[in-house]
Image (cartoon, rainbow, N blue to C red; front, side, top):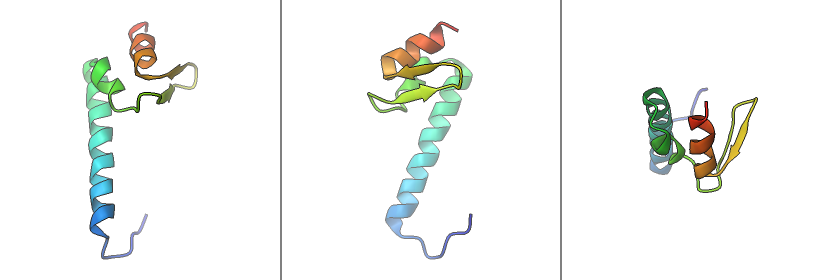
Length: 67
């Protein structure tokens, strides 16, 4: 993806916030910290793994903890 320069400050901040969220999601998942992983979703967020679907942070934690 090629971005036109200069980027607006707001866009740079948004991109960094997205990068941070993705890093927390991945690191938390790798370390088995399901509460931290679920916190990267909104309260009513949905995690769809392709074979299972969890709606809401509590369901995400419970579903991933069950294997």
